[in-house]
Length: 68
Image (cartoon, rainbow, N blue to C red; front, top):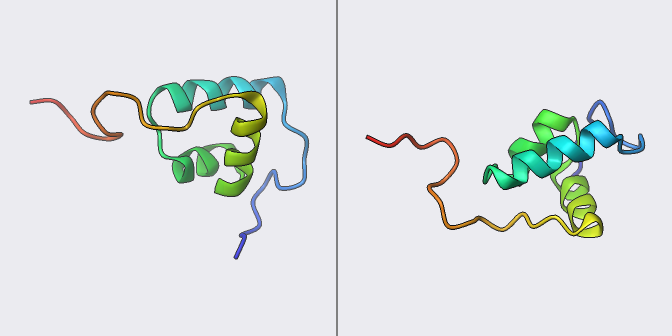
C-alpha cells in the first residue's frame, strides 16, 4: 500500500543522501525520514541498505523525547 510522494521514482540526489545520513544518525524513525524527504518508508529503507546506512536505533533517547 505505497502512497505517492513528491520524489517517487526520481533519482536520489547527493543532498537527499546527506539528509538521510543526518536523520538516521539522529535516531529519526524511517517513516518520518520518508515524510521529510518525500519518499516512501520502503524507499528510504532500500536506499539506506544499499548505501550502508544503519537505520537501527542507536543507544540514545528515542526521537522526540525531551530530557527533564
